[in-house]
Length: 209
Ligand SMILES: CC(C)(COP(=O)(O)OP(=O)(O)OC[C@H]1O[C@@H](n2cnc3c(N)ncnc32)[C@H](O)[C@@H]1OP(=O)(O)O)[C@@H](O)C(=O)NCCC(=O)NCCS
Image 1 (cartoon, protein in one colour):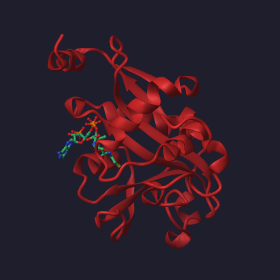
Image 2 (image 1 turned 135 degrees about the vertical axis):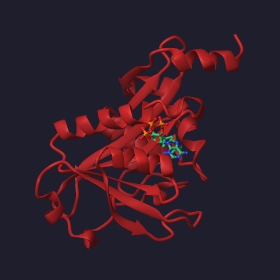
Image 3 (image 1 turned 180 degrees about the vertical axis):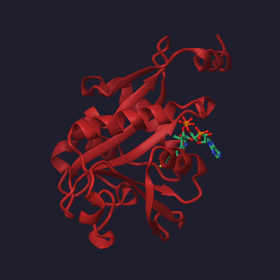
């Protein structure tokens, strides 16, 4: 079957939504990297993916084509205490294959991630997105995320970002003065292209595929 026909068929099939399974890194990590790096001006190193997936693989959800097992969409997150005192979820990466966009796949993946973080007692969930990323802003704002800050020249290409926040518990906004700091503790841009994030070298061992 031609690649184009396969893509069309996948578009009409029910997708399978699954949690990332670390024991299948060899199967899924290359596909995740490929899907996410397609839309980035500079790719993240393998260590960045491992930083998230080794520690918070259970907060990564994938949309798969059930007949080919091809990766159609993915969301990658983390959840940890933030210095402002909140237990903060962070949506680090989200992408859906271009041919499958506009059908609610990203919305479903983000909802699964939000539910998982809420079940683990997150106070809030934050992320950054480019100010010109209409699809992403529409998706998140429809789910209740609010614009908390505009980050001037946030990306390496000089573009600005909005920080978006979803408060999961009453009173969280008051706990988090705006200058209490960044979304993830470290800007996603700072992960890009470098080795293991500081302090995370020990979890980055393993073959670089
Ligand atoms: C952002 C992205 C993940 C959305 O995936 P998706 O599966 O198409 O998302 P959904 O179908 O769940 O919802 C997208 C929403 O944006 C809207 N949308 C999509 N493309 C749009 C565009 N070019 N302009 C305006 N709105 C757009 C859709 O209509 C939908 O809103 P609606 O349900 O209110 O109509 C996808 O476009 C993508 O992978 N982009 C590249 C990577 C990226 O930008 N990731 C986000 C970084 S924070």
